[in-house]
Length: 167
Image (cartoon, rainbow, N blue to C red):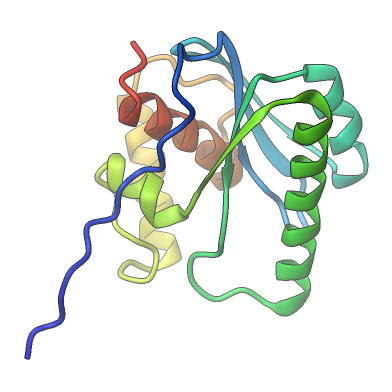
């Protein structure tokens, strides 16, 4: 019997117009968290923020919407998993304080929108190369998207923009 294939879809956001200012975040484990800042359909900056400064930085950014990568793709060691969960907790707490909407997206969901392979089907090296190649083809990639984490933060936002029809 063949395995049934379930189509992976990007999560919906609350009804209403797209906020002018929003963030897409690839939470860091032992590394800093990568954050892409968006104004409408344009990514203006990608940067990395230490976990210790993340709450302060997010509160200062005062976003209306946060697209947060949820879950893990592939294998991850327990310590990094705990640190990533802690980072997500900081993001969720600050979002609650700021009244920001949070949309949680699994890696396979945002990669599917962009036509990238799922991590479990492609090795990390292959996937990083595919993400880097895609960033070279896309217009408007900020200068800060220079490593796998910052590229992922940008691509999470790009997938959200495409999935929600933000032009």
